[in-house]
Every structure is written in structure tokens, then in C-alpha cells.
Length: 109
Image 1 (tube, rainbow, N blue to C red):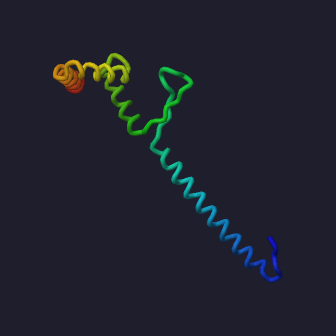
Image 2 (cartoon, rainbow, N blue to C red):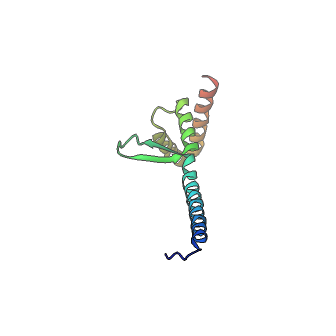
Image 3 (spheres, rainbow, N blue to C red):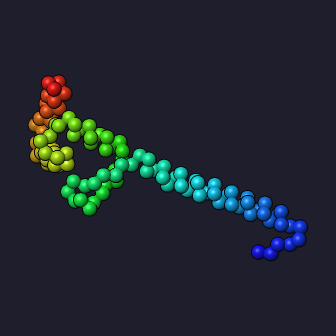
């Protein structure tokens, strides 16, 4: 980059404007990238200690509140898959059983 006599101030002004613009662009990229992680939650997998799961924080809160209710004797994922297989076999009985378990836990606890 050549500086011409008398043009140093203009070149420095242009350079400072370019730097300010680059900082603004980097801030926008940073905000848009990390804004998505504000609603994320990282936790270690129960089945594999080397696996970490990235989940939605709202889903994590729902999972935590369901586990605090202690509706199931087994883990939540096992209970969900058992419910899915049972609903395929006998939807009416499975829905009534699930409804009665939930109301029993909510009313009589």
C-alpha cells in the first residue's frame, strides 16, 4: 500500500472505517451463531459416558419435570417406547391406562 504525501489522513480514515465495518460484521456473525445456543442444553448421555447430547432447553425442562413426577418405574425413553408399542397393539386400553396413571399421580399425591 503506497501512501502519497498529504493523503495519509484520508488513508487512515478509510482504514479505520474498514476496521469498524469488519468489527460490526464479526459482531453480527457472533450474535447470530451464539444466539441459537442460548436455548440449548448440554448433558451427558446416561448410556454412554463419552456421548454428550445437545437438546432444546425447553425440552430438557419438560423432561426434568416429568422425571420429578416419577410417573414411570423405568427411564423416560423406555417408558415412551413401551407406550408406543402398547398403543399400536391396543390403543383404547393403553390410552385409558396412561390417563388413569397420570390422574392418580396428580390427584392422590
